[in-house]
Image (cartoon, rainbow, N blue to C red; front, side):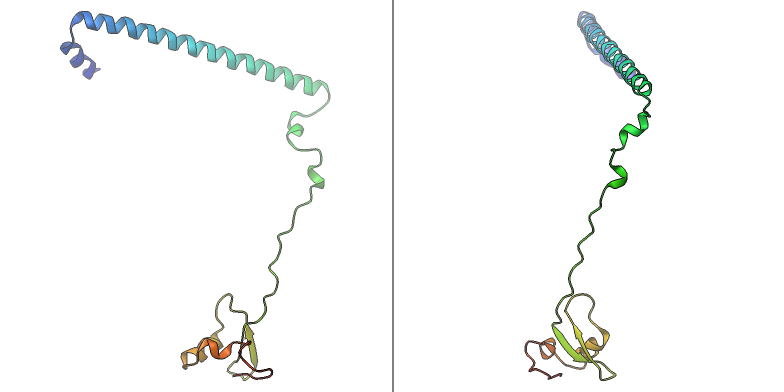
Length: 135
Protein backbone atom coordinates (compact mmCIF):
# COMPACT_ATOMS: atom_id res chain seq x y z
CA UNK A 1 0.00 0.00 0.00
CA UNK A 2 2.97 2.30 0.55
CA UNK A 3 3.97 2.11 -3.09
CA UNK A 4 0.40 2.98 -4.09
CA UNK A 5 0.46 6.07 -1.87
CA UNK A 6 3.75 7.17 -3.40
CA UNK A 7 2.34 6.60 -6.87
CA UNK A 8 -0.87 8.50 -5.99
CA UNK A 9 1.16 11.55 -4.92
CA UNK A 10 2.97 11.63 -8.26
CA UNK A 11 -0.20 11.31 -10.41
CA UNK A 12 -2.74 14.03 -11.10
CA UNK A 13 -5.97 13.59 -9.08
CA UNK A 14 -8.15 13.36 -12.20
CA UNK A 15 -5.95 10.60 -13.59
CA UNK A 16 -6.25 8.82 -10.26
CA UNK A 17 -10.08 8.96 -10.45
CA UNK A 18 -9.99 7.67 -14.03
CA UNK A 19 -7.77 4.76 -12.92
CA UNK A 20 -10.19 4.01 -10.09
CA UNK A 21 -13.13 3.79 -12.49
CA UNK A 22 -11.23 1.47 -14.82
CA UNK A 23 -10.06 -0.67 -11.92
CA UNK A 24 -13.64 -0.92 -10.63
CA UNK A 25 -14.75 -2.18 -14.06
CA UNK A 26 -11.98 -4.80 -14.09
CA UNK A 27 -12.77 -5.89 -10.52
CA UNK A 28 -16.47 -6.24 -11.37
CA UNK A 29 -15.65 -8.32 -14.47
CA UNK A 30 -13.43 -10.56 -12.39
CA UNK A 31 -16.13 -10.94 -9.71
CA UNK A 32 -18.69 -12.00 -12.34
CA UNK A 33 -16.22 -14.49 -13.80
CA UNK A 34 -15.53 -15.98 -10.35
CA UNK A 35 -19.27 -16.28 -9.63
CA UNK A 36 -19.87 -17.96 -13.01
CA UNK A 37 -17.05 -20.46 -12.35
CA UNK A 38 -18.45 -21.21 -8.88
CA UNK A 39 -21.92 -21.83 -10.37
CA UNK A 40 -20.43 -24.18 -12.99
CA UNK A 41 -18.56 -26.11 -10.29
CA UNK A 42 -21.73 -26.35 -8.20
CA UNK A 43 -23.73 -27.61 -11.21
CA UNK A 44 -21.05 -30.18 -12.02
CA UNK A 45 -21.02 -31.38 -8.42
CA UNK A 46 -24.82 -31.78 -8.48
CA UNK A 47 -24.56 -33.86 -11.68
CA UNK A 48 -21.83 -35.96 -10.11
CA UNK A 49 -23.99 -36.63 -7.05
CA UNK A 50 -26.92 -37.62 -9.29
CA UNK A 51 -24.69 -40.03 -11.20
CA UNK A 52 -23.44 -41.60 -7.96
CA UNK A 53 -27.01 -42.02 -6.69
CA UNK A 54 -28.03 -43.64 -9.99
CA UNK A 55 -25.08 -46.05 -9.86
CA UNK A 56 -25.97 -47.01 -6.29
CA UNK A 57 -29.63 -47.51 -7.30
CA UNK A 58 -28.40 -50.04 -9.89
CA UNK A 59 -26.74 -51.95 -7.06
CA UNK A 60 -23.19 -51.11 -8.07
CA UNK A 61 -20.39 -49.76 -5.94
CA UNK A 62 -19.02 -46.51 -7.46
CA UNK A 63 -15.48 -47.56 -6.51
CA UNK A 64 -15.83 -50.80 -8.47
CA UNK A 65 -16.39 -48.82 -11.68
CA UNK A 66 -12.83 -47.56 -11.57
CA UNK A 67 -11.35 -51.04 -12.04
CA UNK A 68 -11.84 -52.87 -15.35
CA UNK A 69 -14.08 -55.94 -15.31
CA UNK A 70 -11.19 -58.11 -16.49
CA UNK A 71 -8.81 -56.80 -13.82
CA UNK A 72 -8.11 -60.20 -12.25
CA UNK A 73 -7.53 -61.92 -15.60
CA UNK A 74 -5.04 -59.44 -16.99
CA UNK A 75 -1.98 -61.17 -18.37
CA UNK A 76 1.29 -59.46 -17.79
CA UNK A 77 4.04 -59.64 -20.33
CA UNK A 78 7.21 -61.16 -19.15
CA UNK A 79 10.35 -59.24 -19.73
CA UNK A 80 12.39 -60.88 -22.43
CA UNK A 81 15.65 -62.14 -21.07
CA UNK A 82 18.78 -61.53 -23.02
CA UNK A 83 20.09 -64.72 -24.50
CA UNK A 84 23.35 -66.24 -23.37
CA UNK A 85 26.12 -64.54 -25.25
CA UNK A 86 28.73 -66.52 -27.08
CA UNK A 87 32.14 -66.57 -25.43
CA UNK A 88 34.63 -64.25 -27.05
CA UNK A 89 37.72 -64.89 -24.91
CA UNK A 90 39.28 -68.13 -23.58
CA UNK A 91 41.97 -68.25 -20.90
CA UNK A 92 43.34 -70.39 -18.07
CA UNK A 93 42.75 -69.30 -14.49
CA UNK A 94 45.22 -69.73 -11.63
CA UNK A 95 44.06 -73.34 -11.06
CA UNK A 96 44.80 -74.19 -14.69
CA UNK A 97 41.11 -74.49 -15.58
CA UNK A 98 40.00 -73.19 -18.97
CA UNK A 99 37.55 -70.32 -18.58
CA UNK A 100 35.61 -68.30 -21.14
CA UNK A 101 34.23 -64.76 -21.08
CA UNK A 102 31.80 -63.06 -23.48
CA UNK A 103 33.39 -59.65 -23.10
CA UNK A 104 30.30 -58.25 -21.38
CA UNK A 105 30.14 -57.34 -17.74
CA UNK A 106 32.98 -57.11 -15.31
CA UNK A 107 36.25 -58.63 -16.49
CA UNK A 108 37.08 -61.87 -14.58
CA UNK A 109 39.86 -61.45 -12.02
CA UNK A 110 41.89 -64.32 -13.49
CA UNK A 111 41.86 -62.61 -16.90
CA UNK A 112 42.77 -59.28 -15.35
CA UNK A 113 45.77 -60.89 -13.62
CA UNK A 114 46.97 -62.25 -16.97
CA UNK A 115 46.61 -58.78 -18.51
CA UNK A 116 48.55 -57.29 -15.60
CA UNK A 117 51.34 -59.79 -16.31
CA UNK A 118 51.73 -58.33 -19.80
CA UNK A 119 49.34 -60.36 -21.97
CA UNK A 120 46.98 -58.59 -24.40
CA UNK A 121 43.24 -59.13 -24.86
CA UNK A 122 43.90 -60.15 -28.47
CA UNK A 123 45.96 -63.08 -27.14
CA UNK A 124 42.79 -64.63 -25.70
CA UNK A 125 40.38 -64.10 -28.62
CA UNK A 126 38.66 -67.40 -29.44
CA UNK A 127 38.34 -66.62 -33.16
CA UNK A 128 42.11 -66.05 -33.33
CA UNK A 129 43.01 -69.30 -31.54
CA UNK A 130 43.31 -72.62 -33.29
CA UNK A 131 40.83 -75.34 -32.20
CA UNK A 132 41.89 -76.79 -28.86
CA UNK A 133 44.55 -74.11 -28.30
CA UNK A 134 44.51 -72.15 -25.05
CA UNK A 135 47.02 -69.49 -24.29
